Image (tube, rainbow, N blue to C red; front, top):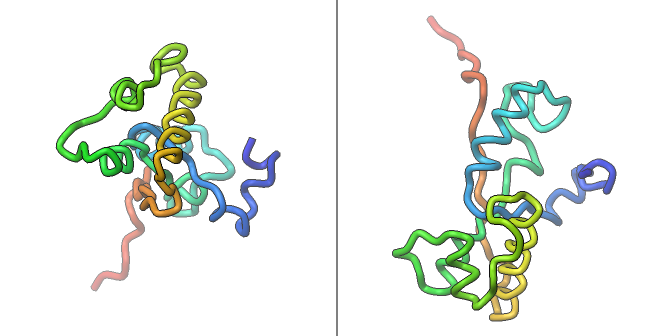
Length: 136
């Protein structure tokens, strides 16, 4: 999908970012999956995740900041409720979660949130131990 839409072009990678509801999918699962299937892209020679897969916005972080909920652990249903939106589809269904995350983003932007000011999360996970450096 990314390649077919020209989104793997290094010059364009900074113009887009994944948005998730939690860090697990891109921080934990994607790197493990890429290493298991020996994908021809996504990992560098040392086994580290590369752009664009290594940065994302966990929508929970700016949501909590925007709505002063820093002491709370927020879920997608809780964010939707706070924004007076109904959960559409089935929670934890990939496409339905994507649509609901989009609705949360749209509502946050309508309240003045600027996604360009959000710090991206980053993956540092590597399926292989780092190469040993010189020893004496």
